[in-house]
Length: 406
Length: 185
Image 1 (cartoon, rainbow over the protein chains, first blue to last red):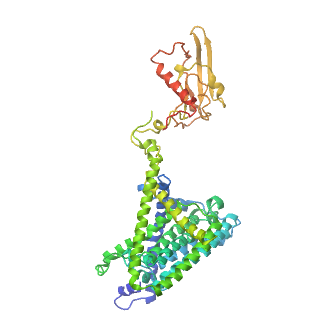
Image 2 (spheres, each protein chain N blue to C red; image 1 turned 90 degrees about the horizontal axis):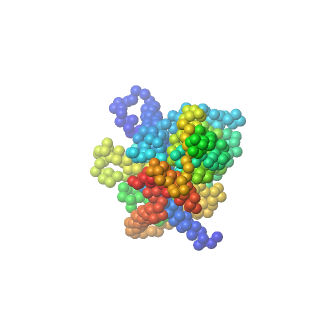
Image 3 (cartoon, helix red, strand yellow; image 1 turned 45 degrees about the vertical axis):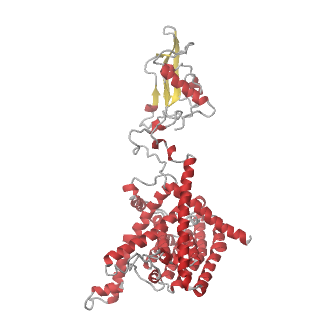
């Protein structure tokens, strides 16, 4: 960012230089937040509802705009037009503040999240630490919302959320450490620079430990983002809408914007740490063509990140919500020990594993992943065939068949 | 809990979640079941035509085969059927002067079509009954006094009435079967 500002002025600038830096950062930040983050969070609601529809053999929203794409705008306009209710006995000041805390916890993460190639608002040298720190701000907002609503459902939801995020922060943090040890840096761009575009050069396939760490991190991140199967703070069937019960209109919308936006944050962190960031093949050849290289890198990074958004949505419509005690058991009895094993295992691996054998392990792990994916696709085809045998397929739909009875 | 159970829990979790995701993924690539009534149907298809034969839609009376036995009027739990019939020597039987069904009251229970000996009163697959006034929901079947149908001992021979009667008997017959006997839509 600073180099960019410096290159704008040939002579001494008319205003103090720090002011130029500040203005440039605010401008770029504004462009990122309003031009990318918010529309992306909005369209994710549409993607989620479409995928949910298809998983339940429905269509999902398909009337507003092409294939219902503008549904999120319609929902947003509707929410803005709704009455803004603050309950009489609520702590009005905290109640009004909570959505902004949640929202800022999510938007602040984008300061250090890369967008592929050189695109990053600020490549902090404590990048990943900063991201985990500010995303935890969300829990403060949710707890604030739960407390200030003066409602037992809200309070229970807020407390659940706090318990959940405090617990899952530990396996998430412990799964980041192996990558930090491996790279020797906390900065997002350095972590990406330590990987390449080939799948086998990704941190994911460095050792079996980092491979497991990836899944531990993804599960923990889902729990931190309050996503199903860990959506206990919302738990519609038990807590109405948990911490957000009393919220209406635009305030309610902000919470959900943060939830869907957080999905992308999870995807971006996963991509940065484990999946090689925005590297594209032939980067060296395109080194002096930034106008071609940077958009390609952006697309590569975005696709990798968004894949995990879709996986999270898919997971949400597959699994039921787990119980509170199960949530705790899963964290403390399974994820935390596994994360510790990963951490120590990676340390020992880095010290004792012969570097000559490293490519072999990477190749084996990549091959194993490909085999797993092939097996998974075969399993999907098995279920498709199975459904057809049980006559559960579409042929049951009277409108899809040529012969109409009677 | 031993180490073996602990490891089994982990592998179970991974396999069951993986298989569950395969099931939902297989749904994602199937075509949805949704019928986009009313405005996005396949060309020339009415939803009513795809419904089962015994679908309980708006009531209809085939006056040609109605015997004016009043069984339906008596069966109706909310009295939405009103029939007036008088013996008329000159006409040679019962003459119906009124057969009204108030569809605003009807709860589509199907109890009227159950005792009907000829299947004259029956539900149709029509369901679009919305209107602006309650009065217009009263279906008046008798426009002018009409002679009630009398079953013949030798069987029906009138080619105009025969198909209507056959349809009515099929309506009753399918109802009487233990499995319902209705065609799957």
